[in-house]
Image (cartoon, rainbow, N blue to C red):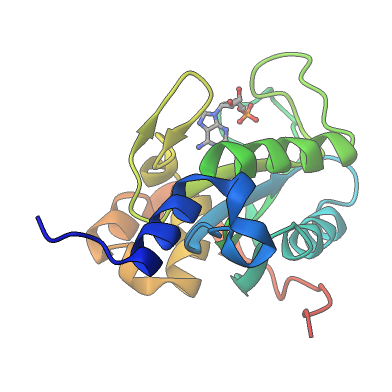
Length: 192
Ligand code: AMP
């Protein structure tokens, strides 16, 4: 192997030793394109989703790339007479790691007053990490791609709207009977 020059040695040392690298030498993680599924069926759900998209855009090391329209869905696997769901999908470019992004999503759910009295309870805000680049993650806290995203029209339809290459026609066809319809624009302030 060729010997490193002095400047290459310094650069290599700084790459692995942040204490020595100074502010200019820190390595920022490469940005990743991530997709977040949003859902709500308690309170003013459309307003909560608009707030949540704005809050996603304001996360550290993160830019909002795109947000779908609002979709309205009859509740599935829920108690009778549960209110309809509103759903959307947001695309982010982020330098947060996947676990840090999940933590940020859970913090936003908490800020929106999310409680978990029982499984599939109505919720003020549900945020799911659908895709994180091309990553496949299977940890105790996080499964990516989200394990149920391909069974859900309320995920696939808004995802197809903003990222058509991420959803096949067959996948959309497979969930076409789920009664999801577009319910207008998601009214949030676009980031400047
Ligand atoms: P939920 O009731 O949908 O809010 O589920 C939240 C739980 O699912 C948390 O314990 C998360 O750690 C876990 N989880 C696993 N994978 C994901 C994912 N891709 N996005 C969001 N939550 C996830």
